[in-house]
Length: 235
Image (cartoon, rainbow, N blue to C red; front, side, top):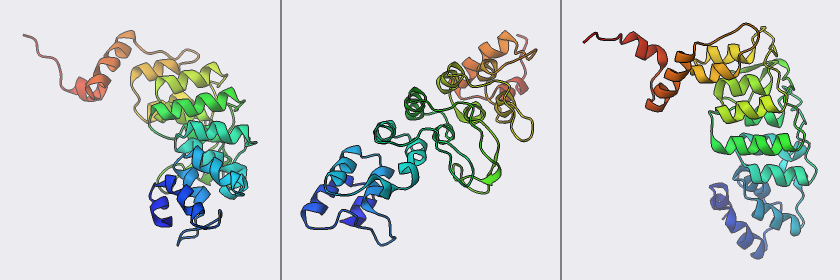
């Protein structure tokens, strides 16, 4: 049964406890049941375990709010904050806050909801990571660059996430350890012109036609430069 819970059947937690297993049961890899429930975002199962004597601290430091944010579990994020998790708690190894974790994936609706919960509870949009420390928010061999959540959202997020951060006070001219702004990150990641437009500051500009074309081309799944290289027939 523990293996099935680890594979996503967190509803079986109720049966597990009824069969007499301790609330802090662990699988063969030493991962506790409550951690698996958090991994899958099952707030109901977590509440049940707490009622039976488990503790939120078993999930990890700050109840692993960063993990809940990274996986897009807005309900769990809200529950953890309601129970004392700090939305501005940085990871000791690299300084990533929950808002950094929520800004680390390609734009997904769930991440926007997580960001909404975090910002509503006082998450700092201008918090910076440490310099040159390994990050677990990406696949492998990635180090932090003293970036803000807006830097990451500029690279990976959608317009909703970017707008939320800006409206919350995120600085457009914030610089990472290399002197790059969120606009620079968006440019490095070849984001469409309508995203770049949202991040403009100072005398930076984007041609209106480039913005219009980028919206059309993204809807078709095309990269702007790829389209331009096709040329234009005169017929």
